[in-house]
Image (cartoon, rainbow, N blue to C red; front, side, top):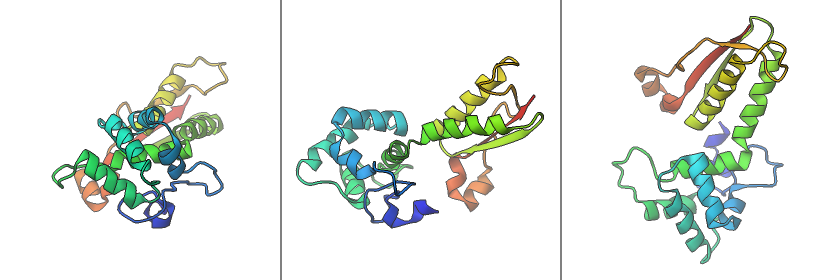
Amino acid sequence: MQLDKGYKGFSFSKEGPLDMRMDPKSKLNAQEIVNKYSEKELGHIFRDFGEDRQWRRAAQVIVENRRKQPIETTKQLADLLISALGFNGKKKLHPATLIFQALRIAVNHELEAIQKGLTKALSFLSKSGRMGVLSFHSLEDRVVKNIVKSASFRKKGDSSLPVLKTLTKKPLVPTLAEIRQNPRARSAKLRFAEKL
């Protein structure tokens, strides 16, 4: 629920500092990325971690505007993105959604953490042990799918990952009723695997 706390800076719908650190002891925060990274570096983050089609424009407008004054709050960044990328309320996705996602992933090294955690978790599975992994966006799901897939093709005796059997060829996704009850569930995907 820390994503809902304005003071953590994860949400563009709540005023707060551009922080986004899951671990408050971590040195890197979103404000540093937004105000110090080059336009090219920002673009790569927005493209690779946000999969935003307007990644070039977002990076460009941030660099142009931070020359006038530092971008320090979630509202500043969200307002800047609305004015640069446009938002009339008819679009399904707020223009800040994917940019904030990308910043959060970059700040917390989330994809590396998923890979590390999942690999470690798989090593603890007993024979016939099953594991379910719930992801909340396509990048996370891709990491999960690739790790499970590569472990499914390992030969016995290869100690880097256990041999797995995929139990869900396609991920389980929420029903419309579940999404109505909890809109945040809309992008959730659940995959299961069993150690052989």
